[in-house]
Amino acid sequence: QKEVEQNSGPLSVPEGAIASLNCTYSDRVSQSFFWYRQYSGKSPELIMSIYSNGDKEDGRFTAQLNKASQYVSLLIRDSQPSDSATYLCAVIGTDKLIFGTGTRLQVFP
Amino acid sequence: DTEVTQTPKHLVMGMTNKKSLKCEQHMGHRAMYWYKQKAKKPPELMFVYSYEKLSINESVPSRFSPECPNSSLLNLHLHALQPEDSALYLCASSPDSVFGEQYFGPGTRLTVT
Figure 1 (cartoon, each protein chain N blue to C red):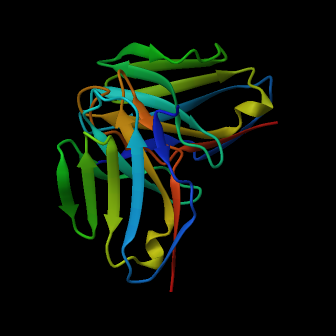
Figure 2: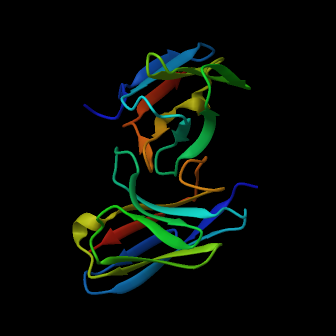
């Protein structure tokens, strides 16, 4: 079983819609969760971190964490073509950051 | 300011060459990392330095040699690389430890010929 799982996509949404990206993890003791955005050919950029159950909002982004279900998600409201990128879910494991394989998001005009 | 800088941006080297990658951060972060990323794959951890000491080596071949001269600088020395080592090499830093938010530099695109 992979430690951090994401649907590889692509997830295609129209401009202005809500994009919903999901991630599950296997280590029940994980406490720190992150979402990175990576444009093609560029490095990962940290966009959200979440440590407690519930929702955390930052601008158009909302991260949601459910530790009981071992599930973390990222909602992007009012999606823009500039949001088209690969979104990496990352979880702190025993001694390192573990990445999912990423979900490619395509926002079409 | 969450800037991590890396030089060079691109590097082409032969299998017999010796080269070095450099990473610098001035955020006062105490943990620094080297990752390797192949196309369409997530970053893969190579080394972790915590408070200038090597704390994690993910069984990386000895042709990759990390160095942390001070708390702001991280180097990756390369020698006798193979074509399959061609990848994007990413440096990252975090404030206190491996359990904090990690900020990535722009990366060095390495091609081994």
